[in-house]
Length: 562
Image 1 (tube, rainbow, N blue to C red):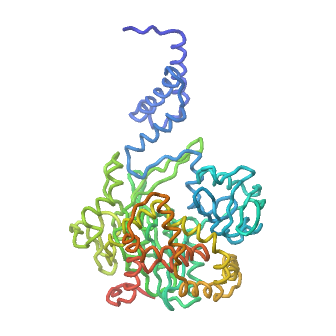
Image 2: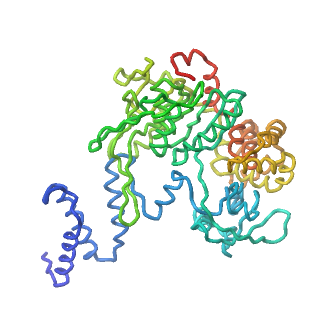
Image 3: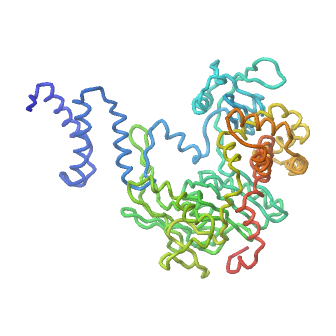
């Protein structure tokens, strides 16, 4: 069958060819293989746009084409649309602009957990426990609005105003507040506290622009409280900025010691070395697990290879690929892998992968479980080619991730089926929110939370405060508070609402972990994340083994201490 070309067809093809001529060539020579492929892609796009039978969303097919190209590369080369770029960068850049509250969703109602100290919401009198039911006269409660849509309404440029409708327990009607949005800090350190008179604990959730400054501030407080040894918790830390990991490594290593180096096909070798004196910390233990990745692995590898600390936990995620952000003209972003990370002794952190096979890559953790790696150290074997020697002569291993010095098996019996289902369906969190709404005033009074918050605000603003004001109320809570029956009754009701089936024996078997988790969540609500982890950490087997490792002098033979 022959197709007759009309004048219209000729003009549209000519337009597609004109598109080709207007595209800047990335190849060095005209008619090179790369040049031909660029022309081919643009011609296809222009032809579809001009000739396809139906209307075409050219933006959508362009984005799908980019995703398709990146899909054939490694698992960490990604494309982010323009509208998502800001949200992607916020946790790393260290701030966003909004009203400044920590919140959770109780059913379909936004409940304020805490206003950010010194933030715009606290300044106008918004309190923990307040329920935000409207934003600029638009109802956000009882209308099944998504959490993302609610956040879009609350956030906005610094200096703009937003009208909030709030229900407060004990106060009739809806209270009106006008909040002037401001820059809200995003912290990458979740917790910092003294475990015992000489041991400090710092949990880092990610590596962002403010991580090193946050760390120095937190550790300075711990030094003032008598810290000599330090536990750094990197469990679940997915990484972040390379420079943030380098800056933090600087705090522990001698001047000139290598931290990490990067190298790629088109990117030459670049080494990062410590450049200043280290902190006066005696022993260092780093806690890791299978979700410790990227920049968190750089810090772990730097301290392990330079014999500066002991790594405790399970083999880390194994992300050793360096992504370079490439801004596209419309504000979208490509993160393109350009190099590998290598530890000081030459270990590549990256685990093996097949280009284009993301599914197998994502199954790695399940494969570790099925192989027995997460259950027993005896199932882990390294060939001689993957054995490396640290500066001090200790053996460490390559082949993907950081293998800890002290291996901690996964306890698969720790959580019951009922506990996992309650957590998955948010029953535990919503039960605490419901119970706190009824008892907040009594708890605030019983544990002098107002004094705690005043001291916390002064601490955040680098002002003088009484350390006892931060500890007295919480210590009384930790020692005296027990989970009451009415909270357990609420939890049981939430389980029934979610159609979770269980027996009385199932509930009793789950009780030990449930009671600790419920108490920790209440502590987070009344105080802050440090207090949450202070209560929940003793149930974490990696944390417990980390404390034991600090006391084991044999482990620290050959490890540099201050």
